[in-house]
Structures are given as structure tokens and as C-alpha cells.
Amino acid sequence: MEHISHLRTVLTRIRAANLTLSPSKCCFAVAEVNYLGHHVGLGPKKVQAVLDFPAPTNRRQLQQFLGLAGYSRKFVPHFAHISAALSDLLKKGTKFVWTAKLSLT
Image 1: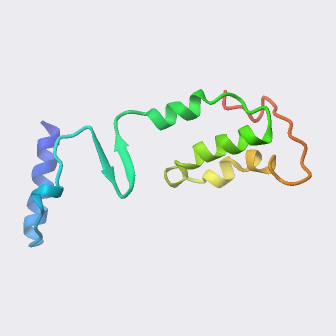
Image 2: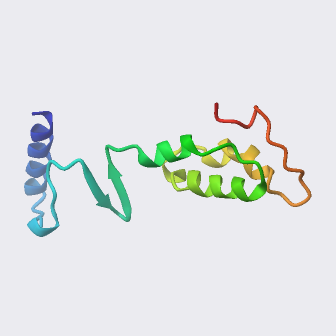
């Protein structure tokens, strides 16, 4: 019922602003939607993929993990600061040593 209330509010504001909607481009009461090139929905598949990723044992695996985690960088405040310790392991001349301090768990 709350969704219908929010929908009514949005549609009322659209009408008040003299805007129109194209029915062929609208989706209502759906669990997932593609928005600005991103798949947005209730399923935490991307988060689960990051959580299930095994601890990297070499630089290549760390690059793969950072690539996967980086998909969400727009949605994680201070992502660069949070991932800095991992990114530092990729610097030239740095020895790759994975420690419990770097682990997510």
C-alpha cells in the first residue's frame, strides 16, 4: 500500500509540473529495473559476489577483486580511501603479502 501512496505522490507532482510520461517507457510495481545503465533491484547479487570472492593470493586475483568491487564505487562513499591498502599492493616494487588486516572478515 505504501508503494501506491508514493506512486500517487510522484504522479501528482508530475502533473503539477505540466510534465508528461511515455507509458511505453514506464514500469510500475516491479522489483528490478534498468536505470541509467545499471541494473537496480532487490537481489544483492553484486554484493554477494564481492563477499564470496576468495582472498587473493597474487596480484592478478587482487586486480580481479578490485575490478569487481569497483563496480559499486559510485555507491560507496570514500571507496578510494577504503580500498587504498589493497590498491597499494599493486604498486610497482611492492611485495604482495596478504594479511588478516587486509581481509574482509
